[in-house]
Image (cartoon, rainbow, N blue to C red):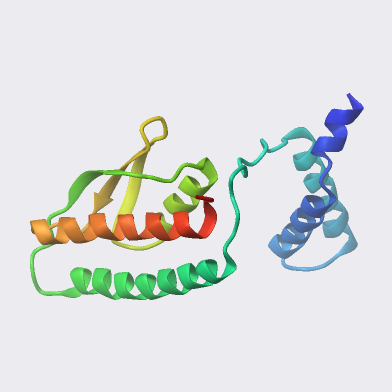
Length: 169
């Protein structure tokens, strides 16, 4: 019983959640602080998170910085593209649902890929087949085969960057 408590007790998470609570209340008072501490303690102790699948992960810091810079550039480009698609004086573009294979081995890296892809406008992961490592994605701009190939290549580039950044060979 005590070992389970020790595994669940995470003081850093309690501090972070307490600070988030105080920020959510928009003013620092002792009542907000104590209330946030109690809520954070209850969350950490009674709703424990599963262990993170971090085996075979090593971070290449230079690649991580390059990945983030590339992602921010792609975010800006995708935002402008989607804004143009919304404002242009033409019919809405054709959309497509595609299945794209994923080569990442680690579930945590797969979740990173999903988050990074979903945060950019123009495409959304609608389903993940973890057993077969397949994404089902919805693509906003799929007027022709070239647009579809470009989006599949964007997914492959993101996947390749994540594999190089996080997974050991």
